[in-house]
Image (cartoon, one colour):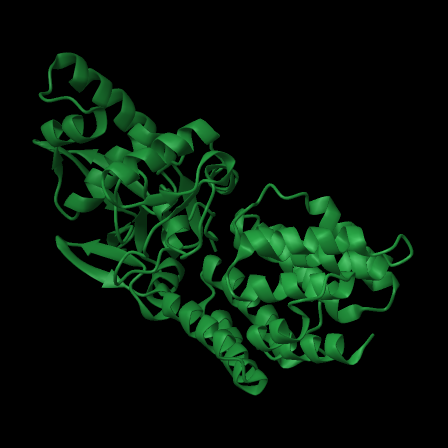
Length: 406
């Protein structure tokens, strides 16, 4: 490897993309193409970066499997940043195995981190934790330790393990400052905002207030019975009753939770749960049936009792009952949560992350665009969507991943 290539690689490792380009911008040999591609990716020109890396992969000879594997890993990182979640994960797995087999432990670990980050975006937290457990960050250089700790923090935040998240972010901040790369320091600071901004709204006895993630975690661990509008469940004392597949039952539970400790009238329940303008006898009959079903499902946590005007939730024992609601509530809040990460998403990637059809996601994006909450650029398969984060809120509890019941 010649001196210019070595100097460019060192510049990239230090976060100096322009310095790297100054050394290899006019060269078209395979190593220079690869370094130019990585530099362009650091500068934000992902389309050009992908083209250069593919050229580099083709330019490396058939015996240069290690160099080609590194190009695959770099292309996978660009795909992840571009939110191209349909990028073939098997290619990354094969590249990681090649790197590991040739003793390139650092780049093999980087490939594993990319795979874990993809799993995290897809909401596959168990798989992400399992894959991350195989990595020991101790021998990593500072920049790689930052990447590792950010993934640890991301999983912990989605799991509502705020102490673990705080510890991981503190380690990430120390490693970022040790690396001396301003972009890494900014990334850690941005990730830390999820713990310092309201994540949900608590409605108790008619009073509403915002909650931080650590307060949500404490609430979930308490004896309080929580009607959880973030995950469409009722939980308390280590027991969770999921109503995610029963929207009518959850709508009734939510109205009763909002009214607690008072009762909710039959008229209100019919209007909110069934979407009817006025309650007639058929609605009242249906309400009795649905109340019976809800009473049966909530038996481990609370009773549903009839009153003169309607119905009331009665938690077992002397436990309090509260309603936990999302920080913002609208029809397409989950899509907005993903767009709020500041990256540009394709509709196909959003469909994968949300577990919905691409057509359903496209309709949601069109609706958000019409309301001025999302915008797109590009055409056809290159079209991408983005949105500014919700001001003053973290979107963690808008993301469609299950929270622990314990």
